[in-house]
Length: 608
Image (spheres, rainbow, N blue to C red):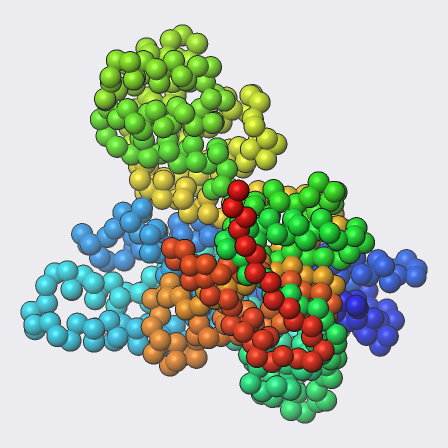
């Protein structure tokens, strides 16, 4: 098997022996790391490496702006919201943050797709007015306030952009829009450097504009990663985007179109396995790896469509595997230390004395047993004295001298003040750092939490609206969802474990794909947006069907060069899980490609 990146580098070098002056743009930073690895392998002499950057880094260079973090954008958005003339209808920060993230994502989308904001917001405001067509002529104050907000959305968008620009930053969409506006200047100053775009598929309108501008200028190449089997099949969703670009872009109408290899129709062994649940999938991966020789494991990737399976898969790995590279992080919310502080916030969110069940639950937590010498002493006295509601003073007295300081930090009144809350949380983390934690992972998770609270303290110092506990907790939950515990490993050796998006432009001889279920791969229709379907149609914004095509591309691209493929899915319905195998598995069955040896297996649960 010859990897796409390896092939592409060889093609470029065969035409340009010295490309140290080149700029190579890839979909992700990880892809850039692999590209450097292939360059090192192919090098026969010492030379300066080309500039290798991700598309997001390239866009920031074009715009001469930095993409603001999600929390920075949220804070600036609330400041912009406060500048609107909504009078008494303005919401608090914690209430605002519940829906503002969706709004910011919509702002980013209209910017990435170069939609005229004035026309868009006028159309959106008209839709919201029409929704109230059945109300009497005399509108209630609630309806008036509701319509006033939608009429001022364009103003909110403009103020947010102005606020971010003052710090030389921008939201992701805003930076993309500015990059398009500044492309002409870039072309005038950087035309001497060849540009290579490698491994892209679904582009937004801003990216399409930039790609085409560079192609028209010359000295630029785009290397698409698609198999000819999919490209020439006009009904296949995996090639929807690339086929459209090659048919519609002016450059390709006047130039020779690329020729694609046919790797998909080569001999492949595909095993489709139905499991009873997610844990059974993870355990079966361990069984598969136990039977593999070491040289095969080095060329194997475990791809998790459902990334919550990372920890179960790690626990299922056989001890014989010495090298593992994990490209995704374990979510911080899965660790004990986070769950402890989540419980602490919940405890202090209620006014008055503490209910005994909440206190006992907190004291029984594993982290409480790290920072307290004898939490069982307090729990025992609560039960023996049949106590229902306890003050902070009573809890400190129950603990005795050995734990009085820690108990005081845990249960003293935070006065609904965010600064006091952060100070106390950091003090508890400091106590935990000096103790022996259950694992090294928990130790690192605690350090991550410390940095998160320090970031919260910095954010609070620059605002006048995140002073109470509710707003602090709202921002805490926003930030914690983005935090993960990153693993270390050799990126180019050993077993690879990754999510679907991390597989972009990477190829593996052996692929084990988990959770290939409908609703996960593809993820299905979701409506976390204020942009209605008719608005999307009017302004040519992507539908959920476009997302399905993106998933199809990633799925089939992984299969193109692989030799053995194992697809696991949950066959049993539980809760929100439908137990339905993905349409991609159904498609493999229906196509019944002669060169593919497709077998089926059903894992049964052993009852002891």
